[in-house]
Image (tube, one colour):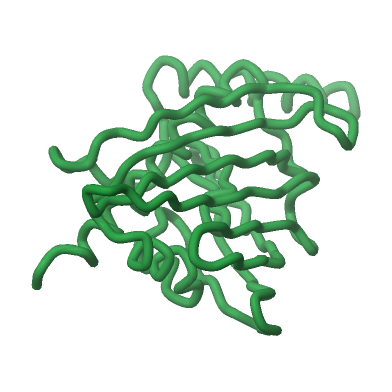
Amino acid sequence: MQIRSFIATLAGWSMFAFAVVQTGAKAAVPFLLGCALSFPGAARAETPPRTPAPALNVERVEGAEGGKVYRITASGTVAATQALAWQVLTDYDHLADFVPDLKSARVVNRDGARVIVDQHGAARFLFFSHDIHLRVQIHEQAPDRIDVSLIDGDMKVYRCRWELVSLNGGGTRVLYQATIEPKFLVPPIVGTSLVRKDIAAMLTAVFLRMETQASPH
């Protein structure tokens, strides 16, 4: 029975990988402030003409903790002030309003510049769904840097950093880097491309939120 179960599982992942590659089947796993790993899923925000797509690189590398991890670097420019961009990133209780597939994010403790946040999301693989929970510690270094690290949850490795650079023209350069590795299995054949698609969608949503808040109402 164990052999049959293993073969069935392997076959299932093969079918999943084939479906993703051939049809772009969609699902997602959101994580706080974009320390995210997702599988193409729920509706994605389209990049508006005035918001350029972020420059993005995702690599599968050996991690400092041992084992493979996803290393992500990205950047983009938004038509919003540094102060407004900071406000969007640190409004933790309202991240679920615009981050794709994030069910909830809630501040459970704040001690000066250190904040603890609980976040709930979902991972979906075709017809299967898996709830995701993370508790993270956030270190705010106003007005231009935010570091996020894992306390507990459904990730083996989970840390990211946001940096905000004020530009002379009034806009803001947003820099993002992350190292992540989930506790659940990600098919190696499609993992990197799926992470890249999801991070791009997350950043698009964040950039759009910043520019929407900056626009006159």
